[in-house]
Length: 175
Figure (cartoon, rainbow, N blue to C red):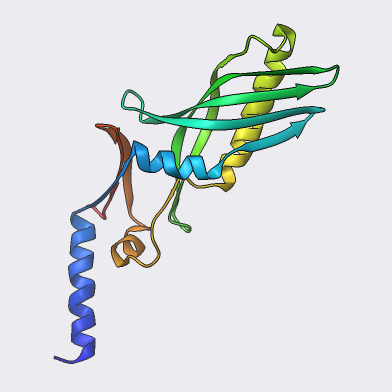
């Protein structure tokens, strides 16, 4: 059998496995490792410095979303500083050209701090929402592997992204 026939057979087998479907399952702990490597995140806006650290990843089967429960530190003019907890929630967005998955449409679900003045909380919430969105736009939570032939072929054929049994389930296939 010549090399051209071997290549045709390999491509046919891979194509048929992709057309029938290929599933990538990413556990909460794998996502946790990825997100933990991306932080701490520090942003300054309107003379307010916000530091987000210690993210705890939570997957939600109810709406196929990912939440990040984080520690928060704030420093603002007038000797204002404080710490607290913040919950950020978002949906998974896939970028086909990169074969990368990002956390998108981020929303601050809750912000709690006994130290930060109540009048400053809406501004901090807004800064965190903008900063987190900008940050997550540049840092994928998962990337298909370039060296993996199935991943390389699958990049163009995303069918769905869902959360099932504590895992992010990514289904790919032509049909």
